[in-house]
Image (cartoon, rainbow, N blue to C red):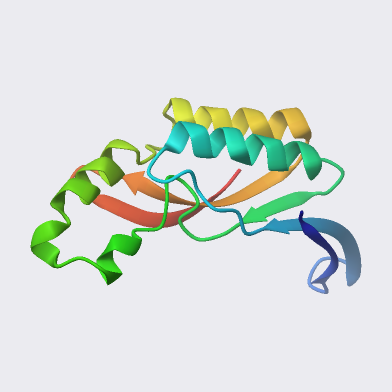
Length: 129
């Protein structure tokens, strides 16, 4: 269940007015190293949050947070990083488009922490759609 909060964005630079924005924040667990299943899970939360302006999700929501760094020796992490890279998102790819479609369909903005597939390695970043 999401906790909802109302925030006021102070826009003193623009006409010294305030705009009310409803935000839903969700700290969801990823479906471990499975971007497609995790995006399906995000879609369910987006439907629930559709009466808000923004759904903010945590760091490394898609496909997961690389927690194995804390428990495995570097030499034992290669298979996990391979799976992480295979499940990473490229800006504009099918998974990215699915997130865009979810935002559009539910008339909300999404802020999602992802692992982005770069040419050399996976990178942790955030996207706002």
